[in-house]
Length: 596
Image 1 (cartoon, one colour):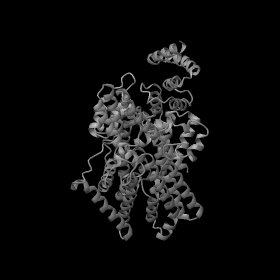
Image 2 (cartoon, helix red, strand yellow):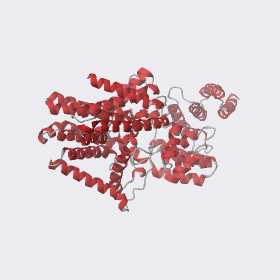
Image 3 (cartoon, rainbow, N blue to C red):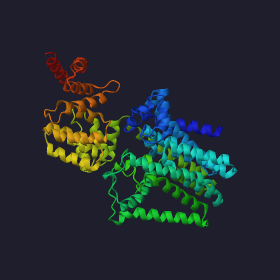
Image 4 (cartoon, rainbow, N blue to C red):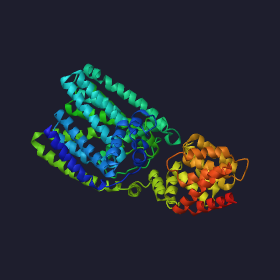
């Protein structure tokens, strides 16, 4: 234990040094929705909601959310503290990997832990706050593997139950750990365990894996992983399987260039080259299975085979064979191989030491030291891009000019209320890369509406509806455009359709309220309905200026003069304080009419 504690202190110090440029970074993409603005993290009863209220959090990773809930209670979600926690968890994972390899009596285990700690392909998982899912779940994943080895060596139902419980905790932190039983079987084979005993021991782990896989598929579909963005054919998915394995292996071997978001590549299913990685992967898989089953090959060959099987199994959930939400943005991401990289890193470090033998151990140590130094430099050089969103998206575009998501998000970031068209060239670029980029089509459509180009705007909105037919944002934009054109009946139809899809969407409620309360067409106006929506819109703590104005208009149309005058006076004062001359002028004119 003292030795492991010293290793952890050394790893933690080294990791804090290498990741120091990212420690002062703020909340990035997804961090805001998952962490900063998550209502479940802001209250004491949020802990109950995280565990037991469906839909309270974006995905059901209650253990990870509990760690953020504790951060909210103890550190007020300070990003600097959370960055340090992620780095310390990463150092813990490197220490646990070292302990696992030592338990297997493999040489240079600490070298493998150090390479895992310093490899730049892991920067995304460590420097991006929302990816605590990875660092936390991996700690329990490795802890469960250590518990499994303890059961293999000493037996006992309590040891097995403890290992299975630790696996459950890993799944509750992130379900991507669900392929652990394959790694445990590989450990049992390496330790020459009898197949019958190993399979009996794996029963509780396999049961948890099946449950986790089923729930993940349901959750991903519930998160919207259905539609045009996920319309890959079976052939394309099979081709992508091998291409992803080759991609991730290549980034591990040569981690340059790395990108926060990679551009979607052409799958090339009509060419031999497009199918070559899958053919090689299937051949390697078959050879590995045959080697494991035959038990006639050397320990070195067995080690290579088991490593490939665990690497392949770890990538299988994110290979593209089944839909998951991120697949709409890119086919691959660095954070997806945080777990699968454990095996190849251990193989290279420990395997090279075994091949060189004890006589050349110093050469192996020197080689790993040099490799670690190069990786540490690459990691240190990469971490500064995680300081803020603009830096992150610009760095991504510099590396991957055809990453449409980076252009979309940078365009949204550059747009301001006073300069709404500031980032429009990035939205145009995103659509040129991927014509069904949902967010960019909406942004470009609104840009055309502002300049009176309604036909071009409608084409953008139509593409957005085709990509996401169940998203209310496009219907809100279509309704707004119809209202500007004076087609109030179509405006109401679009807004009602969007409101039916997203009853809690505040923009839709506000626009529908204003249309029903101030439409010049009396056949469209509906005072009671407008008032109902406006009351619902304002039934929150501190409603904003536009919400209050919508209620003011609804009170006017329903002839509730005393309430309208009282609200109008406070609204006028607030609009003047906020510098909103347009609303202030409109409210003042209405108040004058009411007083006359």
